[in-house]
Amino acid sequence: MKKILLADPSLNTLYTNSFPKWQSTLPISSAKLQTFYQDLHSINIQEIIQHYKNNDIEIVTIADDDYPNLLKQIYDPPWVLYLRGDRRLLTYEHSLGVVGTRKPSEYGVAALKRVLPPLLKKEYVIISGVATGIDAAAHRIALDCGGKTIGILGGGHFHMYPVSNIHLATNIIKYGLLISETPPSRRPEPWMFPVRNRIISGLSKGIFVVEAKERSGSLITAKHALEQGREVFALPGNITSDLSAGSNFLIQEGAKMVLSATDIDVEFERY
Image (cartoon, rainbow, N blue to C red; front, top):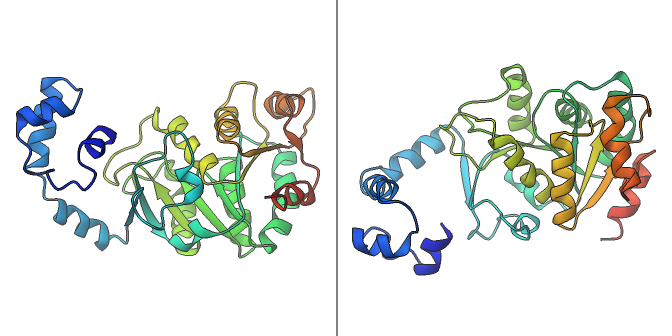
């Protein structure tokens, strides 16, 4: 995409470039280039876009005026986002990413129920990954409080994962916003989930890590947040619990310890 746009920012020659011209533009193998060229001249784009519209899927690209400015600032922003729900949530001032283990303890969920509601009353948008565990709990708390939430999918909209959260995803679409950078018809693959974590942090002014093991996707998201210049918050936990090893480590490394909603709100007010 970057090579194509550098060669022709207006895309005026997208369908008129010869195969040799594409060979000089794109640094990919001849076999892949042949597939690209055939797809470019055979796929009915308008038909696909109409199919998306029929399923209430909107498209925003990095060239559009309402592409999220926070996301545009990261190292590798997605070129395209596929949206279902209220796209106005992308413009809200306070956005907090919440990540954590897929098998939380009662303590982790109880802490979320204490920390998030006061922030939701101040119109914070809660962003997470629609996964089981902490992700799902954060989304549900936001919805139960009548607040706003954004879910970031790993795969496409037509292949919700995990299946156990389809009802939750449906409610997010109805009352919030569901996003994917993956084309709707593409099934999720394991590598997509760590990659989508950069979108969770990229859309957020800060990331709140709740119960994470020493090696986990949550720490990957925290790393993305640090690289993107975002705040990192962590819930302190029991030192004898593996579930708290990652979040306690983040606090040792300088993440802000969260004991109440105020600990997060104070940092956001500094923006």
